[in-house]
Length: 243
Image 1 (cartoon, rainbow, N blue to C red):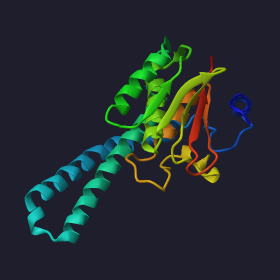
Image 2 (spheres, one colour; image 1 turned 90 degrees about the vertical axis):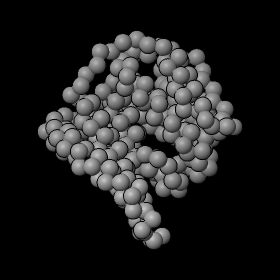
Image 3 (cartoon, helix red, strand yellow; image 1 turned 90 degrees about the horizontal axis):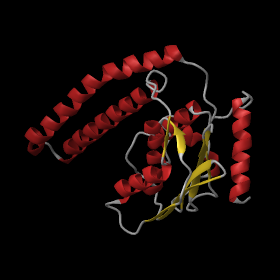
C-alpha cells in the first residue's frame, strides 16, 4: 500500500469514527464532564504535595548524601525521579482536563513556518539528524494546541531514534515520518492510550503526549493513527482535521 492509499484508508476510517461506528482505541468517548472535573480537582490538589516531596528529596540529597551508602543514594535518586515523573503526569492530566474547559479561537496559520521553528528548537543540540519539512498548506484551528500536536510528534520521532525525518501533508492529511525504532504491530493502537510508552527504550516523559494529540484532533473533527512495518523499520504518524 503506497502513501496515497494509506491516507485514503485513514480518511475512510475517520468518517467511520465520526458516524459513531468505530469502537477501537482511537475513538474518543462522549462528554465526560463530571470525570473531567474530578480529574482537574485531583490533579490540581496533588501539585502542592508533589512539589513539596521533590523539594525535601533535593534537600536530603544536598545535605545528607555523604551519610548514605550506595543503596541509600540509589533509593533517594529513584524517589526524586519518580516524584518528578508523577508531577509531570499531574501536569499532563491537567492539560487533558482543560481541553474542554479552556477554548481558544480558531485561526488560520502557517503550518510550515510553525513546524520549521519546532524542528529548530528540538534538534538544535542533536548531531547527525536530517529533518525535511515540506511546504504545507495553511491550517485553521486552535493554533496553540495544534502546534502542541506537531511538537509532540516531532519530539517522539527524535526521541525514538529517528535520524531521517520528513514532515509534510498529502491530500489534507499531515504526517511525520521517521526511520527510528519502529512500532510492533500489536502496539499500534495501544500507543494512544494514556500512560503508554514503547518499553524497549528509556525516554523522558509520562506517556500522555499521544493521548493529548488524540483529544486535540478529535476536537477538530479529525483523528490520528500510526503505520509501521515493525521494529527498527521506522514509523509514520498521520493526522487530519475538519477542513
